[in-house]
Length: 311
Picture: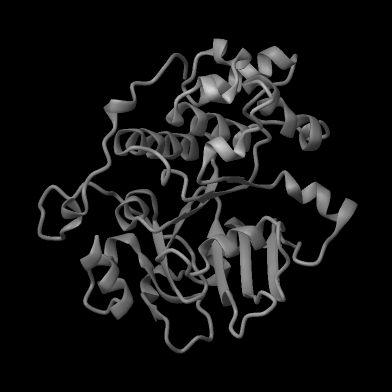
């Protein structure tokens, strides 16, 4: 991929287009493994849970019973969260603001520590690892934050921001999709991957549009070829035209690079567009999970139906 992209060429469909009675339903979906948990109040579509023997070899991230409580609060921010993510899949997590989605993301990245539970990345539990023992796993899971302006250092050029993860975490790694022969060549490859011109490497974040800045943060996240990318509200700060273009870019990158996504958003339409499977979070708990084609099924949890009615 090369050259610039027209941000107006991809528009996010409104929620009306998700109506199951619409014969032009735009989304194609497949199943992804999501573990059941012992929470009695979860409405689960059992058709999306293949046998463990069929799926274990594909699982890149498995979370079990993850709980996090902040000091001074009387209830957990997230409680007993369990799920699995398979290689090359996009798992959506939707819920209203304040329900615990970003807390989960920070725990998965080990930005914050969970009180209990396990985070198995590539078969290894990283929930309690520290320092040098944790460092090799840092490159296996990366994140794209909601606000690209806050995520990029304003004092660094775009090229310097893109090269930093490789210099910190990727030098000892063998890359499959990008090649490092020189800084300039590596940066050019990353910019091309997100459809930005190479001359942006010498610019600073404030010289780019919001959509361009978010493309840079995506390039930075994929540059060391992680197994999992956590997308924490990646389009929330963008206008609707840029949102559609970014979602299409993320879909293309998942296919071409074999990435696995945890796509976090309060936007049910965006989650449905991107994901093969969807989890619904309410007050720190997963209350519903299903294949995206089952969004409008009668057995959906009442809170899921409420979200549908809002959007």
